Image (tube, rainbow, N blue to C red; front, top):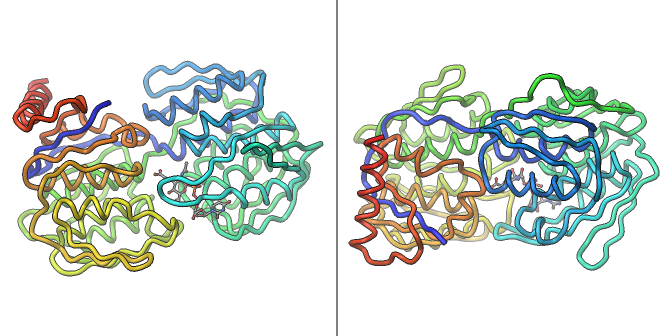
Length: 442
Ligand code: EPU
Protein backbone atom coordinates (compact mmCIF):
# COMPACT_ATOMS: atom_id res chain seq x y z
CA UNK A 1 0.00 0.00 0.00
CA UNK A 2 1.03 3.60 -0.49
CA UNK A 3 0.72 6.84 1.42
CA UNK A 4 1.12 10.52 0.58
CA UNK A 5 3.86 12.50 2.28
CA UNK A 6 3.75 16.29 2.28
CA UNK A 7 6.22 18.94 3.39
CA UNK A 8 3.91 21.78 4.38
CA UNK A 9 4.32 25.52 4.24
CA UNK A 10 4.69 26.16 0.51
CA UNK A 11 2.40 28.61 -1.23
CA UNK A 12 0.46 27.36 -4.23
CA UNK A 13 0.91 29.32 -7.46
CA UNK A 14 -0.03 28.55 -11.05
CA UNK A 15 -2.91 26.66 -12.60
CA UNK A 16 -4.66 23.31 -12.20
CA UNK A 17 -6.82 21.75 -14.88
CA UNK A 18 -10.01 20.26 -13.46
CA UNK A 19 -11.18 16.79 -14.52
CA UNK A 20 -14.68 15.58 -15.32
CA UNK A 21 -16.99 15.09 -12.34
CA UNK A 22 -16.87 11.65 -10.73
CA UNK A 23 -20.44 11.94 -9.50
CA UNK A 24 -21.71 12.81 -12.97
CA UNK A 25 -19.59 10.22 -14.78
CA UNK A 26 -20.77 7.31 -12.61
CA UNK A 27 -24.54 7.65 -13.25
CA UNK A 28 -23.97 8.56 -16.92
CA UNK A 29 -21.75 5.56 -17.64
CA UNK A 30 -24.33 3.31 -15.96
CA UNK A 31 -27.24 5.00 -17.73
CA UNK A 32 -25.77 3.94 -21.10
CA UNK A 33 -27.52 0.64 -20.26
CA UNK A 34 -30.90 2.14 -21.22
CA UNK A 35 -29.93 2.55 -24.89
CA UNK A 36 -28.56 -0.51 -26.73
CA UNK A 37 -25.52 0.26 -28.90
CA UNK A 38 -22.16 1.97 -28.74
CA UNK A 39 -21.78 5.11 -26.60
CA UNK A 40 -18.90 7.57 -26.46
CA UNK A 41 -18.45 9.59 -23.28
CA UNK A 42 -15.65 12.15 -22.95
CA UNK A 43 -14.02 14.12 -20.11
CA UNK A 44 -14.25 10.98 -17.98
CA UNK A 45 -11.79 11.19 -15.07
CA UNK A 46 -9.26 8.42 -14.54
CA UNK A 47 -10.32 7.16 -11.13
CA UNK A 48 -10.68 3.91 -9.21
CA UNK A 49 -14.48 4.38 -9.07
CA UNK A 50 -14.62 4.71 -12.86
CA UNK A 51 -12.62 1.47 -13.29
CA UNK A 52 -14.99 -0.27 -10.84
CA UNK A 53 -17.99 1.01 -12.84
CA UNK A 54 -16.55 -0.18 -16.15
CA UNK A 55 -15.74 -3.56 -14.68
CA UNK A 56 -19.31 -3.82 -13.34
CA UNK A 57 -20.66 -2.95 -16.81
CA UNK A 58 -18.29 -5.58 -18.23
CA UNK A 59 -19.76 -8.21 -15.90
CA UNK A 60 -23.25 -7.22 -17.05
CA UNK A 61 -22.09 -7.96 -20.62
CA UNK A 62 -21.18 -4.45 -21.80
CA UNK A 63 -17.50 -4.16 -22.74
CA UNK A 64 -15.73 -0.81 -22.76
CA UNK A 65 -12.58 0.72 -24.16
CA UNK A 66 -10.82 3.60 -22.44
CA UNK A 67 -8.67 5.97 -24.46
CA UNK A 68 -7.50 8.87 -22.28
CA UNK A 69 -10.58 10.72 -21.10
CA UNK A 70 -12.84 9.04 -23.68
CA UNK A 71 -14.75 5.86 -22.90
CA UNK A 72 -16.54 3.74 -25.47
CA UNK A 73 -19.14 1.34 -24.10
CA UNK A 74 -21.06 -1.25 -26.05
CA UNK A 75 -24.42 -1.88 -24.39
CA UNK A 76 -25.92 -3.86 -27.28
CA UNK A 77 -26.36 -6.96 -25.13
CA UNK A 78 -27.16 -7.51 -21.49
CA UNK A 79 -25.93 -10.91 -20.36
CA UNK A 80 -26.40 -10.68 -16.57
CA UNK A 81 -28.42 -8.26 -14.52
CA UNK A 82 -26.57 -8.39 -11.24
CA UNK A 83 -24.39 -6.08 -9.13
CA UNK A 84 -22.69 -8.47 -6.70
CA UNK A 85 -21.61 -7.72 -3.12
CA UNK A 86 -17.88 -7.60 -3.89
CA UNK A 87 -18.52 -4.69 -6.34
CA UNK A 88 -21.18 -2.77 -4.37
CA UNK A 89 -19.17 -3.00 -1.15
CA UNK A 90 -16.30 -1.15 -2.88
CA UNK A 91 -18.51 1.42 -4.55
CA UNK A 92 -22.03 2.22 -3.33
CA UNK A 93 -22.83 4.02 -6.58
CA UNK A 94 -23.21 0.52 -8.10
CA UNK A 95 -26.84 0.69 -6.88
CA UNK A 96 -27.35 3.03 -9.84
CA UNK A 97 -27.77 -0.06 -12.04
CA UNK A 98 -31.21 -0.69 -10.48
CA UNK A 99 -33.16 1.85 -12.56
CA UNK A 100 -31.50 1.22 -15.95
CA UNK A 101 -31.56 -2.59 -15.63
CA UNK A 102 -35.22 -2.71 -14.60
CA UNK A 103 -36.14 -0.39 -17.47
CA UNK A 104 -34.20 -2.27 -20.12
CA UNK A 105 -34.18 -5.85 -18.85
CA UNK A 106 -37.20 -6.10 -16.53
CA UNK A 107 -35.21 -7.61 -13.69
CA UNK A 108 -32.10 -7.16 -11.61
CA UNK A 109 -30.33 -8.35 -8.49
CA UNK A 110 -28.27 -5.83 -6.57
CA UNK A 111 -26.43 -6.25 -3.30
CA UNK A 112 -27.70 -3.87 -0.63
CA UNK A 113 -24.89 -1.38 -0.03
CA UNK A 114 -25.15 -1.21 3.77
CA UNK A 115 -23.73 1.69 5.76
CA UNK A 116 -20.41 3.37 5.17
CA UNK A 117 -17.97 5.62 6.98
CA UNK A 118 -20.15 8.72 6.61
CA UNK A 119 -23.56 7.34 7.52
CA UNK A 120 -26.21 4.62 7.31
CA UNK A 121 -27.25 5.62 3.79
CA UNK A 122 -30.39 3.55 3.13
CA UNK A 123 -31.89 3.24 -0.39
CA UNK A 124 -35.56 3.27 0.65
CA UNK A 125 -36.30 6.33 -1.52
CA UNK A 126 -34.80 4.65 -4.60
CA UNK A 127 -37.03 1.60 -4.05
CA UNK A 128 -40.11 3.68 -3.25
CA UNK A 129 -39.78 5.58 -6.54
CA UNK A 130 -39.15 2.45 -8.61
CA UNK A 131 -42.10 0.70 -6.94
CA UNK A 132 -44.34 3.59 -7.92
CA UNK A 133 -43.24 2.95 -11.53
CA UNK A 134 -44.34 -0.69 -11.27
CA UNK A 135 -41.32 -2.59 -9.93
CA UNK A 136 -41.56 -5.22 -7.22
CA UNK A 137 -38.73 -5.84 -4.81
CA UNK A 138 -37.85 -8.65 -2.45
CA UNK A 139 -34.92 -8.74 -0.08
CA UNK A 140 -32.98 -11.93 0.46
CA UNK A 141 -29.49 -12.74 1.64
CA UNK A 142 -28.36 -9.11 1.57
CA UNK A 143 -29.59 -8.70 -2.01
CA UNK A 144 -32.50 -6.76 -3.40
CA UNK A 145 -34.25 -8.55 -6.27
CA UNK A 146 -36.26 -6.32 -8.54
CA UNK A 147 -38.59 -7.21 -11.37
CA UNK A 148 -41.29 -5.58 -13.47
CA UNK A 149 -43.73 -6.54 -16.22
CA UNK A 150 -43.48 -3.04 -17.65
CA UNK A 151 -42.94 0.40 -16.17
CA UNK A 152 -45.77 2.93 -16.00
CA UNK A 153 -45.35 6.66 -15.36
CA UNK A 154 -46.30 7.86 -11.87
CA UNK A 155 -46.24 10.85 -9.50
CA UNK A 156 -43.41 10.38 -7.03
CA UNK A 157 -42.83 12.49 -3.94
CA UNK A 158 -39.36 11.99 -2.46
CA UNK A 159 -39.02 12.44 1.31
CA UNK A 160 -35.54 13.88 0.75
CA UNK A 161 -33.95 15.14 -2.49
CA UNK A 162 -31.58 12.15 -2.71
CA UNK A 163 -29.02 12.47 -5.51
CA UNK A 164 -28.53 8.86 -6.58
CA UNK A 165 -32.18 8.12 -5.72
CA UNK A 166 -33.34 10.78 -8.19
CA UNK A 167 -30.85 9.41 -10.75
CA UNK A 168 -32.07 5.83 -10.36
CA UNK A 169 -35.73 6.81 -10.76
CA UNK A 170 -34.95 9.07 -13.74
CA UNK A 171 -33.02 6.35 -15.54
CA UNK A 172 -36.02 4.03 -15.24
CA UNK A 173 -38.77 6.57 -15.92
CA UNK A 174 -37.32 7.52 -19.32
CA UNK A 175 -38.51 4.14 -20.67
CA UNK A 176 -41.82 3.99 -18.72
CA UNK A 177 -45.17 4.20 -20.49
CA UNK A 178 -46.67 7.64 -19.87
CA UNK A 179 -45.55 10.58 -17.76
CA UNK A 180 -43.59 10.51 -14.51
CA UNK A 181 -43.27 13.50 -12.21
CA UNK A 182 -40.60 13.46 -9.49
CA UNK A 183 -41.37 16.00 -6.77
CA UNK A 184 -38.63 17.11 -4.37
CA UNK A 185 -36.04 15.85 -6.87
CA UNK A 186 -32.33 16.53 -6.30
CA UNK A 187 -31.14 19.70 -8.06
CA UNK A 188 -27.42 18.91 -8.06
CA UNK A 189 -25.52 19.77 -11.29
CA UNK A 190 -24.64 16.07 -11.65
CA UNK A 191 -28.38 15.23 -11.84
CA UNK A 192 -28.75 17.94 -14.51
CA UNK A 193 -25.85 16.37 -16.43
CA UNK A 194 -27.59 12.98 -16.32
CA UNK A 195 -30.83 14.58 -17.60
CA UNK A 196 -28.90 16.20 -20.47
CA UNK A 197 -27.23 12.89 -21.28
CA UNK A 198 -30.51 10.96 -21.25
CA UNK A 199 -32.11 13.64 -23.44
CA UNK A 200 -29.20 13.22 -25.88
CA UNK A 201 -30.32 9.56 -26.23
CA UNK A 202 -33.87 10.65 -27.08
CA UNK A 203 -35.41 10.89 -23.60
CA UNK A 204 -37.92 13.64 -22.83
CA UNK A 205 -37.02 15.12 -19.45
CA UNK A 206 -37.89 18.67 -18.48
CA UNK A 207 -37.31 20.65 -15.29
CA UNK A 208 -33.65 19.62 -14.84
CA UNK A 209 -32.10 21.73 -12.09
CA UNK A 210 -35.46 22.30 -10.39
CA UNK A 211 -37.13 20.18 -7.73
CA UNK A 212 -39.85 19.01 -10.17
CA UNK A 213 -38.72 16.71 -12.95
CA UNK A 214 -41.21 15.74 -15.63
CA UNK A 215 -40.37 12.71 -17.75
CA UNK A 216 -42.41 11.72 -20.81
CA UNK A 217 -41.58 8.07 -21.28
CA UNK A 218 -40.45 6.86 -24.73
CA UNK A 219 -40.44 3.30 -26.06
CA UNK A 220 -36.83 3.28 -27.21
CA UNK A 221 -33.58 5.18 -26.69
CA UNK A 222 -30.49 5.11 -28.93
CA UNK A 223 -26.86 6.16 -28.44
CA UNK A 224 -26.14 9.75 -29.42
CA UNK A 225 -24.11 10.34 -32.57
CA UNK A 226 -21.77 12.81 -30.83
CA UNK A 227 -19.60 11.98 -27.80
CA UNK A 228 -21.11 13.27 -24.55
CA UNK A 229 -18.75 15.41 -22.41
CA UNK A 230 -19.03 15.01 -18.61
CA UNK A 231 -19.35 18.30 -16.74
CA UNK A 232 -16.37 19.59 -14.71
CA UNK A 233 -15.92 18.35 -11.14
CA UNK A 234 -17.13 21.11 -8.80
CA UNK A 235 -15.84 19.27 -5.71
CA UNK A 236 -12.36 18.80 -7.17
CA UNK A 237 -12.48 22.50 -8.11
CA UNK A 238 -13.46 23.49 -4.58
CA UNK A 239 -10.78 21.26 -3.07
CA UNK A 240 -7.96 23.00 -5.00
CA UNK A 241 -9.42 26.41 -4.14
CA UNK A 242 -9.40 25.44 -0.45
CA UNK A 243 -5.81 24.22 -0.75
CA UNK A 244 -4.77 27.63 -2.09
CA UNK A 245 -6.84 29.40 0.57
CA UNK A 246 -5.08 27.38 3.28
CA UNK A 247 -1.54 27.77 1.89
CA UNK A 248 -1.76 31.25 0.40
CA UNK A 249 -0.60 32.04 -3.12
CA UNK A 250 -2.25 32.71 -6.44
CA UNK A 251 -4.00 29.78 -8.08
CA UNK A 252 -6.22 29.47 -11.13
CA UNK A 253 -8.36 26.41 -11.75
CA UNK A 254 -9.22 25.89 -15.41
CA UNK A 255 -11.67 23.76 -17.40
CA UNK A 256 -14.25 24.28 -14.67
CA UNK A 257 -17.56 26.11 -14.26
CA UNK A 258 -17.92 28.85 -11.61
CA UNK A 259 -21.71 28.76 -12.08
CA UNK A 260 -21.79 25.35 -10.39
CA UNK A 261 -20.26 26.59 -7.19
CA UNK A 262 -21.69 29.88 -6.01
CA UNK A 263 -22.16 28.72 -2.38
CA UNK A 264 -18.53 27.58 -2.12
CA UNK A 265 -17.14 30.73 -3.76
CA UNK A 266 -19.20 32.96 -1.44
CA UNK A 267 -17.86 31.09 1.59
CA UNK A 268 -14.27 31.39 0.36
CA UNK A 269 -14.79 35.15 -0.06
CA UNK A 270 -16.03 35.28 3.55
CA UNK A 271 -12.72 33.78 4.65
CA UNK A 272 -11.00 36.82 3.14
CA UNK A 273 -9.73 35.25 -0.09
CA UNK A 274 -10.01 37.18 -3.34
CA UNK A 275 -11.85 35.33 -6.08
CA UNK A 276 -12.07 36.18 -9.78
CA UNK A 277 -14.00 34.16 -12.32
CA UNK A 278 -14.25 33.75 -16.08
CA UNK A 279 -16.45 31.50 -18.18
CA UNK A 280 -14.45 28.35 -17.38
CA UNK A 281 -11.88 29.41 -14.77
CA UNK A 282 -11.63 30.61 -11.19
CA UNK A 283 -8.67 32.47 -9.70
CA UNK A 284 -8.11 32.61 -5.95
CA UNK A 285 -5.43 34.54 -4.10
CA UNK A 286 -4.54 35.26 -0.54
CA UNK A 287 -1.40 37.05 0.47
CA UNK A 288 -0.35 37.55 4.05
CA UNK A 289 -3.58 38.13 5.97
CA UNK A 290 -4.95 35.22 8.01
CA UNK A 291 -8.20 33.55 6.98
CA UNK A 292 -11.31 34.78 8.79
CA UNK A 293 -13.67 32.54 10.75
CA UNK A 294 -17.05 31.64 9.20
CA UNK A 295 -20.25 29.69 9.72
CA UNK A 296 -21.35 27.01 7.31
CA UNK A 297 -24.26 24.58 7.13
CA UNK A 298 -24.42 21.82 4.54
CA UNK A 299 -27.59 21.55 2.48
CA UNK A 300 -28.82 19.97 -0.74
CA UNK A 301 -27.89 21.98 -3.87
CA UNK A 302 -27.91 24.97 -4.28
CA UNK A 303 -26.94 25.05 -0.59
CA UNK A 304 -23.41 24.42 0.61
CA UNK A 305 -22.34 20.88 -0.48
CA UNK A 306 -21.58 18.23 2.13
CA UNK A 307 -18.74 17.08 -0.13
CA UNK A 308 -16.90 20.37 0.65
CA UNK A 309 -17.52 20.32 4.40
CA UNK A 310 -14.31 18.50 5.39
CA UNK A 311 -12.11 20.78 3.26
CA UNK A 312 -13.74 23.85 4.87
CA UNK A 313 -13.05 22.30 8.30
CA UNK A 314 -9.33 22.56 7.55
CA UNK A 315 -9.73 26.24 6.65
CA UNK A 316 -11.71 26.81 9.88
CA UNK A 317 -8.86 25.19 11.84
CA UNK A 318 -6.52 27.89 10.54
CA UNK A 319 -8.88 30.88 10.53
CA UNK A 320 -8.72 33.75 13.00
CA UNK A 321 -11.67 33.41 15.39
CA UNK A 322 -14.27 30.72 16.02
CA UNK A 323 -16.03 28.98 13.14
CA UNK A 324 -19.05 26.75 13.23
CA UNK A 325 -19.75 23.91 10.82
CA UNK A 326 -23.09 22.10 10.76
CA UNK A 327 -23.52 18.88 8.77
CA UNK A 328 -27.14 18.16 7.88
CA UNK A 329 -26.85 15.57 5.09
CA UNK A 330 -24.89 12.69 6.63
CA UNK A 331 -25.00 11.75 10.31
CA UNK A 332 -21.37 10.70 10.64
CA UNK A 333 -19.30 13.03 8.52
CA UNK A 334 -16.99 14.51 11.17
CA UNK A 335 -14.43 11.69 11.26
CA UNK A 336 -11.71 14.01 9.91
CA UNK A 337 -12.07 16.30 12.93
CA UNK A 338 -10.21 13.90 15.25
CA UNK A 339 -7.36 13.66 12.74
CA UNK A 340 -7.22 17.46 12.37
CA UNK A 341 -7.02 17.65 16.17
CA UNK A 342 -3.93 15.44 16.01
CA UNK A 343 -2.39 18.14 13.83
CA UNK A 344 -3.19 20.81 16.42
CA UNK A 345 -6.74 21.91 15.47
CA UNK A 346 -9.03 22.99 18.30
CA UNK A 347 -12.40 21.33 17.64
CA UNK A 348 -15.42 20.69 19.80
CA UNK A 349 -18.31 18.63 18.45
CA UNK A 350 -21.84 18.78 19.75
CA UNK A 351 -24.44 16.82 17.78
CA UNK A 352 -24.11 17.76 14.13
CA UNK A 353 -22.19 20.99 14.77
CA UNK A 354 -18.45 21.40 15.10
CA UNK A 355 -17.12 24.53 16.77
CA UNK A 356 -13.60 25.21 15.61
CA UNK A 357 -11.32 27.79 17.25
CA UNK A 358 -8.68 28.67 14.68
CA UNK A 359 -5.00 28.17 15.53
CA UNK A 360 -2.01 30.01 14.02
CA UNK A 361 -0.68 26.85 12.41
CA UNK A 362 -1.16 23.10 12.16
CA UNK A 363 1.70 20.67 12.71
CA UNK A 364 2.54 17.74 10.46
CA UNK A 365 1.56 14.27 11.73
CA UNK A 366 0.66 10.81 10.44
CA UNK A 367 -3.08 10.86 9.79
CA UNK A 368 -5.61 8.40 8.47
CA UNK A 369 -8.79 9.25 6.63
CA UNK A 370 -12.13 7.50 6.71
CA UNK A 371 -13.53 8.66 3.37
CA UNK A 372 -12.71 10.50 0.19
CA UNK A 373 -13.42 14.11 1.22
CA UNK A 374 -11.94 13.60 4.70
CA UNK A 375 -8.72 12.51 2.97
CA UNK A 376 -8.76 15.67 0.86
CA UNK A 377 -9.15 17.77 4.03
CA UNK A 378 -6.08 16.09 5.53
CA UNK A 379 -4.02 16.66 2.39
CA UNK A 380 -4.92 20.37 2.59
CA UNK A 381 -3.96 20.40 6.28
CA UNK A 382 -0.64 18.80 5.38
CA UNK A 383 0.03 21.34 2.60
CA UNK A 384 -0.61 24.25 4.96
CA UNK A 385 0.91 22.73 8.12
CA UNK A 386 4.45 22.85 9.45
CA UNK A 387 6.75 19.91 8.80
CA UNK A 388 5.95 16.50 7.35
CA UNK A 389 2.44 15.03 7.15
CA UNK A 390 1.76 11.44 6.16
CA UNK A 391 -1.74 10.71 4.84
CA UNK A 392 -2.51 7.00 5.04
CA UNK A 393 -5.22 4.95 3.28
CA UNK A 394 -4.94 6.93 0.07
CA UNK A 395 -7.13 4.46 -1.80
CA UNK A 396 -9.91 6.84 -0.78
CA UNK A 397 -8.21 9.67 -2.72
CA UNK A 398 -7.69 7.42 -5.74
CA UNK A 399 -11.45 6.94 -5.87
CA UNK A 400 -12.14 10.63 -6.47
CA UNK A 401 -9.12 12.82 -7.30
CA UNK A 402 -7.44 12.29 -10.65
CA UNK A 403 -3.63 12.68 -10.59
CA UNK A 404 -3.73 14.52 -7.26
CA UNK A 405 0.00 14.41 -6.59
CA UNK A 406 1.05 15.57 -10.05
CA UNK A 407 -1.58 18.34 -10.13
CA UNK A 408 -0.29 19.61 -6.75
CA UNK A 409 3.33 19.35 -7.92
CA UNK A 410 2.35 21.56 -10.84
CA UNK A 411 1.43 24.42 -8.49
CA UNK A 412 4.43 24.19 -6.18
CA UNK A 413 3.45 21.65 -3.52
CA UNK A 414 6.20 19.50 -1.99
CA UNK A 415 4.58 16.11 -2.02
CA UNK A 416 5.27 12.45 -2.82
CA UNK A 417 3.50 9.16 -3.04
CA UNK A 418 5.55 6.48 -1.29
CA UNK A 419 5.25 2.95 0.00
CA UNK A 420 3.64 2.56 3.44
CA UNK A 421 6.77 0.66 4.45
CA UNK A 422 8.90 3.82 4.53
CA UNK A 423 8.69 5.16 8.07
CA UNK A 424 12.07 6.78 8.68
CA UNK A 425 11.61 10.60 8.75
CA UNK A 426 14.83 11.31 6.84
CA UNK A 427 13.84 8.82 4.13
CA UNK A 428 10.36 10.35 3.88
CA UNK A 429 11.86 13.84 3.56
CA UNK A 430 14.25 12.56 0.90
CA UNK A 431 11.34 11.02 -1.03
CA UNK A 432 9.45 14.33 -0.98
CA UNK A 433 12.54 16.25 -2.12
CA UNK A 434 13.27 13.81 -4.93
CA UNK A 435 9.68 13.60 -6.18
CA UNK A 436 9.27 17.39 -6.10
CA UNK A 437 12.60 17.96 -7.86
CA UNK A 438 11.65 15.46 -10.59
CA UNK A 439 8.29 17.20 -11.09
CA UNK A 440 9.94 20.64 -11.25
CA UNK A 441 12.47 19.41 -13.81
CA UNK A 442 9.84 17.93 -16.12
N1 EPU B 1 -31.14 8.87 2.08
C1 EPU B 1 -32.15 8.10 2.63
N2 EPU B 1 -32.81 7.21 1.81
C2 EPU B 1 -32.51 7.06 0.49
C3 EPU B 1 -31.47 7.84 -0.04
C4 EPU B 1 -30.80 8.74 0.77
O1 EPU B 1 -32.44 8.19 3.81
O2 EPU B 1 -33.15 6.24 -0.18
C5 EPU B 1 -30.40 9.81 2.93
C6 EPU B 1 -28.93 9.43 3.08
O3 EPU B 1 -28.75 8.46 4.11
C7 EPU B 1 -28.28 10.74 3.40
C8 EPU B 1 -29.11 11.73 2.59
O4 EPU B 1 -30.34 11.07 2.29
O5 EPU B 1 -28.40 11.03 4.77
C9 EPU B 1 -28.46 12.21 1.31
O6 EPU B 1 -28.09 11.14 0.53
P1 EPU B 1 -28.08 11.13 -1.06
O7 EPU B 1 -28.89 9.95 -1.48
O8 EPU B 1 -28.42 12.44 -1.62
O9 EPU B 1 -26.55 10.80 -1.32
P2 EPU B 1 -26.02 9.77 -2.37
O10 EPU B 1 -26.84 9.87 -3.59
O11 EPU B 1 -25.82 8.44 -1.75
C10 EPU B 1 -24.41 11.44 -3.58
C11 EPU B 1 -22.94 11.52 -3.86
C12 EPU B 1 -22.20 11.77 -2.56
C13 EPU B 1 -22.71 13.09 -1.97
C14 EPU B 1 -24.23 13.02 -1.77
C15 EPU B 1 -24.85 14.31 -1.29
C16 EPU B 1 -22.69 10.09 -5.77
C17 EPU B 1 -22.17 8.82 -6.35
N3 EPU B 1 -22.50 10.28 -4.48
O12 EPU B 1 -24.58 10.36 -2.66
O13 EPU B 1 -20.82 11.92 -2.90
O14 EPU B 1 -22.08 13.34 -0.75
O15 EPU B 1 -24.86 12.67 -3.02
O16 EPU B 1 -24.58 15.35 -2.17
O17 EPU B 1 -23.24 10.91 -6.48
C18 EPU B 1 -18.49 11.84 -2.53
O18 EPU B 1 -18.33 12.10 -3.73
O19 EPU B 1 -17.54 11.88 -1.70
C19 EPU B 1 -19.83 11.51 -2.04
C20 EPU B 1 -20.04 10.89 -0.87
